[in-house]
Image 1 (cartoon, one colour):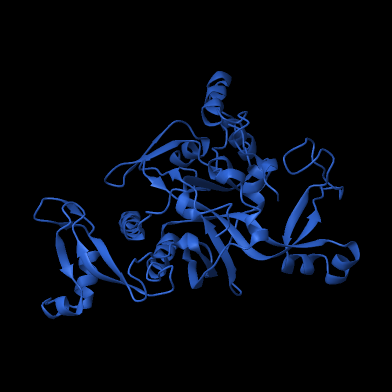
Image 2 (tube, one colour):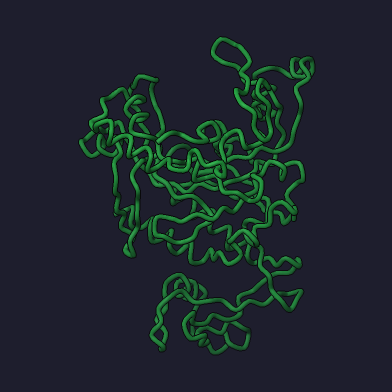
Length: 393
């Protein structure tokens, strides 16, 4: 693994996909009944799995607090989409500016102000809302560095010095190789000498159903050991008192009058032990090749992914996974010192921006709006916080 990034030292060594998947199933069942820091990265670097083939990605763990107040390797947020015609065109996405909290019953409780929420609650059917979880990721494919242009075809330059750029340097877009060839042509790329580079730092936002597909793959990945062997769950015990509850060894199965389907159903829900503790059971692992099982996590592998269907009916498919180091040239794209950036990428949109973009009047007075922007953008001037120019696009 690269010295620059080790997921096991980044707060996610003990991330348990079994508990994560249980929470997602509960949420899916329940669903059935200031300023814009890093907005460039938010808009240009959003990943969407291809529907006409597959591609390879590497998820990067970032530790954030989810709506329930728990540590999570993703960023929890609400996105609004406005399909109406505003001042800046039809169809725009917004990051909800309310603060959200989830209670033990998975009920969500908002606080604060959001014009999109207010419009939706007033019956505006052109506005939607959905809860998403954003992962930082590397797209492991080839790109060309092509200068960004404004609407008049002029090359756009950096206006200030940064860690990776100087004032007056052209802003370079990483354009996916296939897209660049389709838009510009292979001969034009060769003639203009555009540099071919590997990898792009991106973010991938998933809803509950897509996360369920991903979490299922997380469990499959954990059946592989870092030594190369296969891991089996030979026993399940109480997380409260460590008492043995299920013995799935060959000897234990002989005395267990349960089918595989019944065992799976039992493991999928909390178990109330004789000690009084009620929780999902904890597995005891055995590796086929070593005496110290060390299961792979999703952060340790490259994933081959694709998408089937469109919109709310789409399905994420994780085909294969490969345990491998992050390629060195792609690892260079990660933020220095393992700094988290997703909280800046998905910082709440200010009330002023919401009103201007939708072409509506801001019903709150200027002082109220200023306080709202400061609340959500209080770290915008902190030099320790990343910004778009802190990344080597």
